[in-house]
Length: 58
Image (cartoon, rainbow, N blue to C red; front, side, top):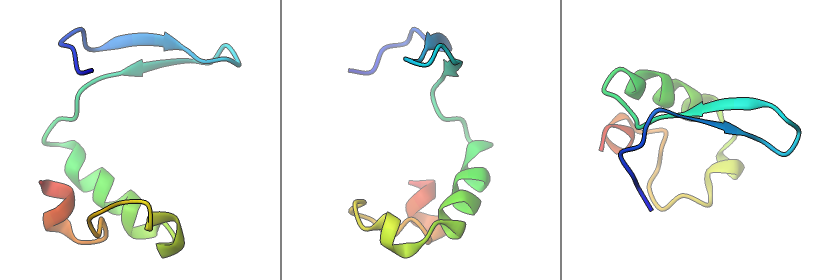
């Protein structure tokens, strides 16, 4: 369920604190670079090919 209560601070099981927020336009390049460096075998769970810019952008 998506809520508008973002950003939201969460605490993981190991007590690490993280901040969850909605994606912003500036995140596209970072996500594209991440998926481009990820081994193809790790990307098989995704319906779209996330090594293509247009799929990350959408």
